[in-house]
Every structure is written in structure tokens, then in C-alpha cells.
Image (cartoon, rainbow, N blue to C red):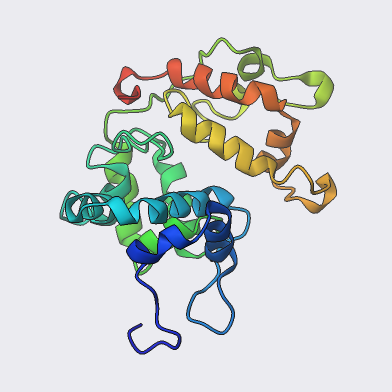
Length: 248
């Protein structure tokens, strides 16, 4: 990078020269004819916004704060996981990081394999598992699935969409898939901020017509959820789960 032309700037010194909108555009699209690449995955503006927020904080960040945010907190075979998810799998108190402790083992392994094969939509997770062998992915899934956290139980959240869906809008109930014996991940006790963010990310840009958006099941389902119900559904699910994952 030191030999790059033009030279890569020190973000701690130059971030203040740009607006949030400009930083977003640079991170999202990269800069042609330089070493600055575009964000690897489309449809993940939430990841781009988090990176912009990180860059914005760099000028006032101490070395200790930087290390705490960028380096794994626990050495060992799962260091790539614990940097974000914590040694206990509960997300280090961050509302936008999912709880993976107690999650279904098969779901975790399936997700990890998708990330490793670069068939997922998360550039952050693809980077985290890059170079991990399949036995290592299986060990990580086994490790975090065995931890206390999310409960393998049917959702008990009182929100009517969780329990019954909206049949008139062809919106199935959350509990139809997110329950024991079904392939969907456990949602009871997951962080409300993470759930709401993922639902909105699946909905996509409201200015794009529906037929041009992804047609995978969760994307279609998310677009059928009324926007003004997303936060209530996420909060309902989060409060209905394990006390282990309550926000700090």
C-alpha cells in the first residue's frame, strides 16, 4: 500500500474532509484508477454505514479503543469469531451483532459454509471465515451452538404477525419456520436492533420495483411486513427470549 499511486491517505487525518454521504459513496463504490475497491457485496448498505461510522470515529479514537474494536478479545481457534461475537457468543453488547450462542448447529454451519464459499451477502463474514477449513467451520458451529444463549423453543412473542402472520397479504407467521424441527434460525432472544436491521436490509431500496429485487423467501417475506411493524416485531421477539441476551 505504501507504493500505491496515489498514496493511501491516513483516514484518521482525512476523514473529517468528507461528509458522511461522501464517505458512504467512497466505501460503497470505491475510487476508479486507485487501490480503493468497492464494497465486495451489493445490497449490504448496513455494513457500509457501519464502516463509515467507524471511519468517522477514527480521528478521536485512542490506540486502545482501536485495538478493542479491531482485534480479537480471546486467543485460540475461534479468535475470528470472538472479535465480534464475543467469547460467550452474545455479541459483546453490540445491538447490530447477532447472538450466536445457542443457535441451531446446522444453521450456523450452513451459514458459515455459505460465507466461506462467498455465496452470502456479508462481506464482513466472508472476510472473517476466509481460509478456514470445513473441519474448522464445523468446530465453530459446534462450539457456539453448545453455549447457553438462545433457546430452542417456539416463539412466544405476543405480536400477532409472529403468531399468525397476515394471511390476507400472503405473509406467513414467523413461528412457521423459526421453531424446533424447522430449518429457520432461532429468533427468540435475538437482539432487537439486529433483527430490525436485517428485515429492513431484506426489504431493499424502496425506490426499486419489487420484480427487480431478490426473490429469495426472506426477502419476499420482509417486503410484505408493514414498515411500521418491523421494530415492534423485533422488540417482541427479543423480549420473549433468554434473559442472557438482554441489552446491557
